[in-house]
Image (cartoon, rainbow, N blue to C red; front, side, top):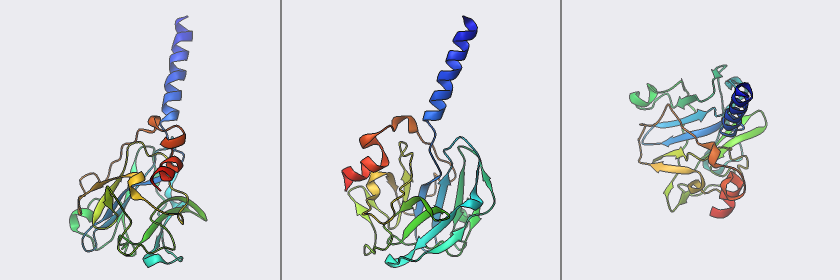
Length: 207
């Protein structure tokens, strides 16, 4: 009986762990600060190490449908860890938090950013092919001069980069040049199941 109970408890624990995982990587933090203070944080919420060399950052500037692509390095990102990329001319404090720097990471609030794996879109910020003027805005904040951090319940990337975009659906907003949370991310995917709590449901509600 004790052995059976132990196995049942172990099975319950494993189910709980599995339900807290994400299906793939996603952009957990976006920094659009002053000057060259640009950064992205990529989070591995899956249950397995992921080879980042399969992925790239695609920046679509000023409403262009053509991207400037930044390949990611052959780094194994372990579960629960993040990878930070910044502009190489950013503030020394920000550069000091980076796992990688790149000259082409220089988006502004009106530029779409996509995390891709080959031809597959894994996550996106903004709307590809559309120039919103200065930024995508919503009642809670804007993609211009701000740090955006994914909410705890966010578990699935936005894989539709060309549809209308509302950052309030999945981000908390922090002041410009706030780097305090960069380098770590916490998610609570157990609170996401279906319907309104999914990314698709949230987008439909805020649209």
